[in-house]
Image (cartoon, rainbow, N blue to C red; front, top):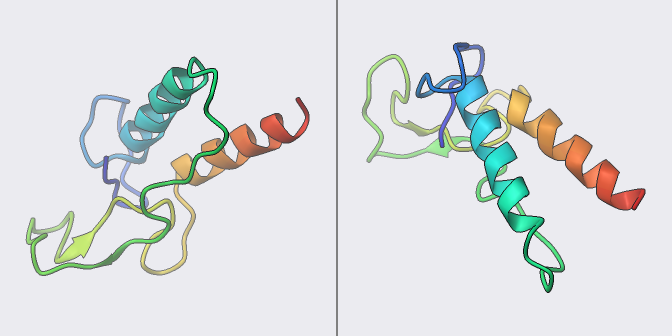
Length: 91
């Protein structure tokens, strides 16, 4: 689930930070149910250039699935995943 940094809406608004955050929340809930799982990693840490992502005003030739924007700004999903990792550390 890609998100454009600074674009906000509810958890069902595609391309919003809330949409991406919600997707990660659901994935973590699902992964917590896998007893033999020993680690996870986000799919893409930082947005990157992609000629296959032409959607104007949203992608503009960037893959927006990163937790950090192409300008280094941390999206809401970054902080959600950070909190999850910290919680695991304390378990």
